[in-house]
Image 1 (spheres, one colour):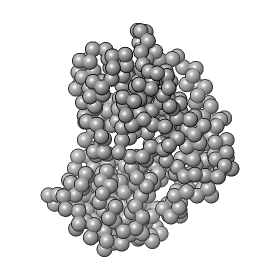
Image 2: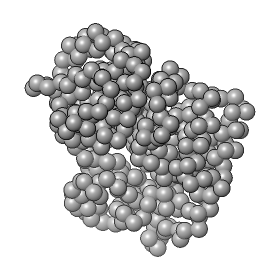
Image 3: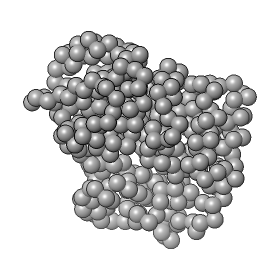
Image 4: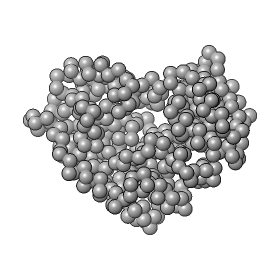
Length: 381
């Protein structure tokens, strides 16, 4: 088997903690090629990354330099030479950490996007990932026979209910802040550091300050928008412009303190607006009506709105559709059992990786996936 790792937007943390173990496993049983640009804007592979990979099995490194290597993060100015080069490698599988979807579509072999593997409401290791057919097709899963569905739901139900009970025991967050009754909508913001090239797919504006201002201008006066910021924005992003924007909106928008989690606020809000973050799972967990601004697919069971105006109208009339909690439980169980894996797990090896590359859905791996999830969550009871 020949595997190509195509990594134009890999960050140093992802390379060290996720890619190195995957390359190590794959290189022991397959011909492995790594194709990536030189470092730029917090992404790419340079001497520091190569040094961290010095103990890997024999792999073929292809590091792209030159004046145009920066364009690989979004869309190569002239993709054909790159496509021809990959054609010469002729991989059976391509594992992509790439925000650009158009170029990999022309690669030979089966293309997989390496994406974050967490799912709400669970706190899971940051090294949990999965191999997706596209970047942000949220909640999408195959049709499974009733027996499999019942098996997965019954397995995760104790942990699901435990989370509901523990969150319900926490003091409720008053979305209206003690003021007059309003429709309250929660919008979790996405990570907006320059290294996050996935924001190129956002239909709305960037940065987050402009996104908040534009959305607030669309909402009627009786709607209050609450905003929670991404944890990494607190650590790595200058948020002064966001604070200034919210202050200028005269109380119509609330930027909630980082001590208030999206999970806690979502419990009490009327609905949520999300983009491509995993926060869609929080709306599903609480059964909250959801409006999603995206270029990607949303599973039918999410019943997500695509139009903010229709979403607000239905919230106000008390007829807003919402995700089914039973489907939310089933999706989380399916994702953890079938999709998610940890390259740092002791049992992760070439056979595990190859099986996932060849079969996107395989019930024979569910028991191992369940056991791994149970260990990460400290048991289900």
